[in-house]
Image 1 (cartoon, rainbow, N blue to C red):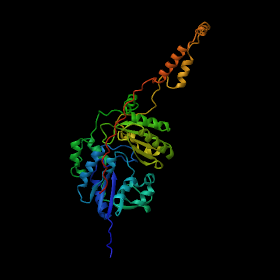
Image 2 (image 1 turned 90 degrees about the horizontal axis):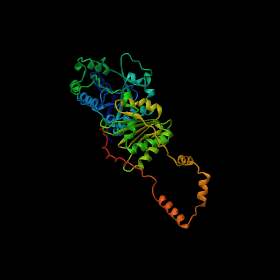
Image 3 (image 1 turned 120 degrees about the horizontal axis):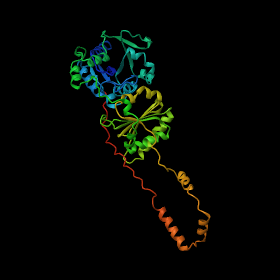
Image 4 (image 1 turned 90 degrees about the vertical axis):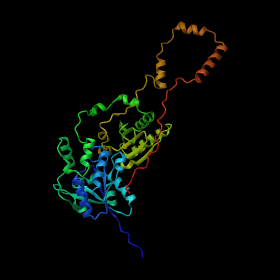
Length: 403
């Protein structure tokens, strides 16, 4: 007789956790008990697509703080996939990775009541509903627009928010009573959520024409290829020294899936023509987002609505960034322009023409001219100085996935 396989009940609880507080811990505990979960995974977001602002603390700090919270219960786990991706991730992507790594598990996605009323804006929401059961934390002051389609659980009423804690920290007020063990000390050790007066204005970071001249040749070729395919709002962000993934991010917009595909193909072809440069393409043009990882730079190609949701420019607003434009051409750039320049040469006078006509042309001089023409033809008119393409970085180690 075949033994019955008992499905593990696994919860997924995502958020900014900026910072994580006792309210998060209580909600997670209520979820485990009311839904009889075997384990619950906290998923700190790198940056939530539907949030209007970037997190206050870095993704790495928020990841470490949520790990401190997770140590309070053996059922709690932490998944760092979105943080290591160093980009905003759709919930459907994350849930799909859980589904692939835990095919026999019964998955539950926990969201707040405020998020539940925005589900119609979520990327591929119908596909998401097929992969996971969505459970809403009932919260005082929020009413669900369509309760019949969602599961809800009641949690202990704790009126606490991350924004309130950040405000108290800014005003130097005590917060330890609101935070899980170890989180308050972590915030103090790393001086998080404190006001700084040395912030560089965003306006001074942008449109720096000198920056465009300093980017690698392979990146310039890629940008030119994108412009050839009518890419709009082409922006380059310098993240050298602050990102462990790459040195530059390139953002560009295409109006449709076919245009995004053409842009991705053109960018990839430009990499193949650059010695030593390599690229990996991910994403679906029809979904409105394609990513090309060229190691030294990462290209994000968006449909307008998807780019607006991600707001990567705001996420990296403290880094130098500029709109890429076609390099200014020299005074004479084409053969047609060169001919026009020659045509403007003053015509010879009648006496000069007569003098030339009377001058005997010998076979020797003709041969000399022919030899001269051959010599000129064999010699390049100008020698171009081409910088060597950047050497591709070694492939990064495989990013972690839920165990």
